[in-house]
Structures are given as C-alpha cells and as structure tokens.
Amino acid sequence: MFKAFLQGKPFGHPLHPALVHFPIGLFLLSLVLDIASYLEVTSNVLFRASLYAMGFGLGMGILAALTGLVDRSDIRLDHPARKTSTIHMALNLTALGLFGINFFLRLEQENLAGLPLPYLLLSLIGVGIFLVSGYLGGKMVYDSGIGVGRHRRYTRTPRETIDVSFLVRHDGWAPVCDEAELRDGETLRVACDGNIMTIARQGGEVYAFQEFCTHRYGPLSEGKLQDHRVVCPWHRSCFDIRTGKVVEGPAKVDLKTYSAAIRSGKIFIK
Amino acid sequence: MIDFLQGKWLKHPLHPALVHIPTALWPMAWIFDLFSQFRADNVFVQLAFYAGSLGLIAALFAIPTGFADWTDIRREKPAWKLGLYHMGLNVVVSILWTINLWLRIGSFQTDTSVPPGLFWLSTTATALLLLSGYLGGRMIYAHGISVARLSKTKWRKIAEEGGAAVPPEHGE
Image (cartoon, rainbow over all chains, first blue to last red; front, side):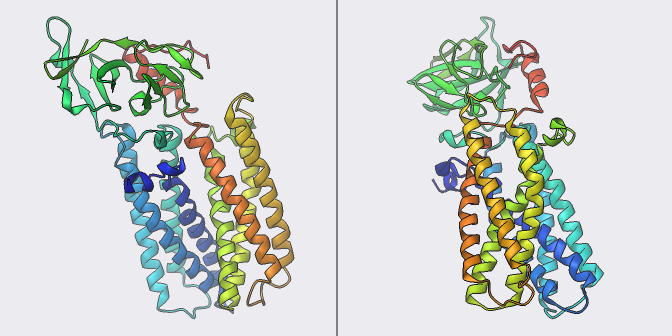
C-alpha cells in the first residue's frame, strides 16, 4: 500500500513526474542566480539566494529520487524503456551528487560576493546533466507511456515477457507456467513465434489476446481488468477479453484473440 | 508553426517540459514569501522576486505551446474540457503573477519581508496553480494526451511484426 502511495495511485497521478518540477526549476533558478552573482561583486545576496534555491532543490530532488525508484521497479525488465530508466536514474543521481558537493562547498563561505568561476561551472554541468536526463524522462512518458494510466491497476504487472516459442507441442499448444503463478485479476505477457499476447485471468478462466491496443499500441498486459474487460492504460480503449471486441473507443479495430486453457495445473496457449 | 510548438522537431512535447519552471518556481516564490514573514531577511524577498520572474518568463513560452497541444484534442473527449479549465486557470495565474511582480519591482531590493497583500496574492496564485497542474497531469497520466503521438509508427511496426490486428494506416 505504501508503494501504491509513492506511485501516486490514490491521487490518480504519479508522484515522481509531479515532484521533479521542483529540482528542475530550482536548480535552474540557482544557475541563473549564479550567473548574476558571478557578475555582481558588491553584494552577497545573490550568492545566498542561489544557495537557498540549491538547498531546496536538493531536498525536493531526494523526494523525487525515492518516488522515481519506485516507479522504475514496475517497468518490465525487457521493456526498451527499462534501459532508458537506468540511464535517467544514473544521470539524476550524478547531477544530484554534484549539486550536493556544490552546496556543501558553498556552505563554508556564506559571505561571498562575486562567485568564483568553478562554482558556476559546477552548477552549469549539473543543470546540463538534468536537461539531458529530463529529456529521457519525458521520452519514457511520451514515447513509451511509462506511468500512464497505471493508477487504475492495483494488481502486479508482468515482470518480463515469457517466450514460449520453443515449447509448442505437436498439437499446437504451448505450456506457459503453473496455474498458481497467475492470480485472478493479473496478466502475463507472452511471446510465441513473434506474436506478443496478454494472458489474463478472470473468474477462474484464462484468456489470451494481442498485447498491443489497436489504437496506439498501448500495452494491454498493464491495463486494468474488470468484468471480462481490459482497459488500455494509455487512452482508455476498452475490449472484451473473451471475444476481443471493442467495447469503447478510441480504438475501432477488434483485438486478435488466441486460445488459452488451464490443464492439469498449467496454463496453455495456442 | 503548430508542429514546432508541439515539439515535433525535438521528438518530445514542449509544453510539459517548459511548465517545470513556473510549476516549481511560483509555488517556491510563495514559500520564500512565507519564510520572509517569519524571518525578516531581504534574501527571501529577492529570491521570491527572482523565482517569480523566471517562472513568468518560462510561462510566456509555455502558454502558446500548451495551446498548440490543446488544439489537437478532439472536442468530444473529456480531456478537451480538462484542457480548457487548465488553460483558464493558467492564464489567471500568469496574470496574477504579472501584477504581483509588477507591484514588487520598487521594493524587493530593500524590503526584509513581503507585504501581507502581496503574500496573499501569491497564496491565491499558488493554490490555483497546484489545481491547474494537477489537471494538466491528469490529462497525460489519466487520458494519455500526447502519449505515443510521436512514437506511433514505432509501436505499429512492433505490433505488426507479430501479426497483431492493427488499424488501417492513417486511421485514428
């Protein structure tokens, strides 16, 4: 439940992208004030102003890092954005560390007028790294849809894609996993001979349908399941998981469905 | 022009990137105002002024980009109305900060605390901005506005390769 809170599920809005406004805005402000205090040699007020902005930026940055870490833990291991998230995290921690050093070095000389160049450069590098990292973070949301619509789903999402291509038997059926590994309201993401599908369990039965929404190809294995329907996390297209038919748009094309069954304690697909 | 404002050249929508600055700095300006009420120090008054000003400059860029994104939302969608409220609130907040900063210009370099009237002006603007920011976030994270708009072709290719049903090309 604490994890769901850090992911912002109760608010219907992830916390990480809301919190990151603050370090980004504040570090940028401190850089602007640094440039001004580099040029201003008569008073130390700009130096102190920049120091405070940086301090607040560090505090908010730590909160943002915590929530970001939690959001990252739900990205599928084989998702291309997983790698992006690793780089995003590494860059953010580096920049946060640089600003931490920057801040503590300045604490020792609170009455400075005319900021020495090395401090200014340190801020400049920090902001530069944050810009690159922020761009990657934005790409994760706007290209890969990470964090989009996830607040509607409270059950765990697939950790990775299970490839069953080499397990297909003579009769065309392929075993996926033990029945116990898929609880009611949960999904699996399965690949078989290039087909990527979602296996969903509802009311004791299992259903298999194409993973990609027919609107903008959102990941249905991360959508919310309810009353034999799946809602795409991205744009709320809703499909009947038994037939693949569109229940509600924006999607207009039905999903391709596959056969799925539970036999002697194992889940099979065809 | 619309394409430029929507950030197609950057492969990242511009509006949500630009709004970081006012969304962070205007509430922070209010926090600095608050600090100055309890600890009289000119540094907080100056910080609030600079935070507010940088926020305003960025907001002037954020408004046209946001408007450009909004024109792509169809009217019958719930996000269209959310966008309208979001825009209305943001315009009000931007005007409030313009007035607020204008009234500070003469005194921010010497005052040791922000006058109560201006403090309440910041408080109002901050409350409205937080509400507006929440609506903006809901547009993305609950309605998927701008999501997979620029990466649609990439996802289509991945889906098609596996033989999944896909909509006709150029269809919405």
